[in-house]
Length: 229
Image (cartoon, rainbow, N blue to C red; front, side, top):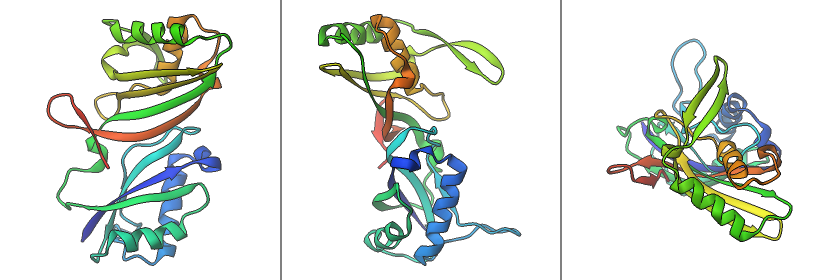
């Protein structure tokens, strides 16, 4: 058995496809590709594949990852050629590499994620945006009320915001962020945007922004994050 890591994009109408439906789309594409996929056991065998982290509905993915297990050793180029032709519109395979079979599960490796948020804010200036960015990064704590199925709770976003950059061109604002993700906790990109708007006193809503997840990261030595692909 051989293990391959696939990097793919999820854009256009596909960004509204939920995670379970995304899994089914990949399973169907693997069957159409005629690749020697390893199947699970039981009464309902399914292609063996493991995704790095679910992508929230509506967020575009530019560097999503999934591990696929094959029964034969094939070149990454051949896998990419066959599977790319079988994927539906909005899903595009951008890279394939072989990874050790004994490596930790992909989902367990995720410790960070990079996002880009794009929107428009009337009257904002580069100076104001930079002041808000610096205020966030210089804060010792950033208490934030997060609502969930069990009610509201207050979390500190500051330890989970690793990097934050802001670019302003006219009324267009682009925020690039590296945040904590995975089993140790998550910081959501819309929370960072909401915090930026609140800190700067800008008139706008996080829902008015477009969100892209651009890369996923694993933890290396100490707290350093390294790309998973």
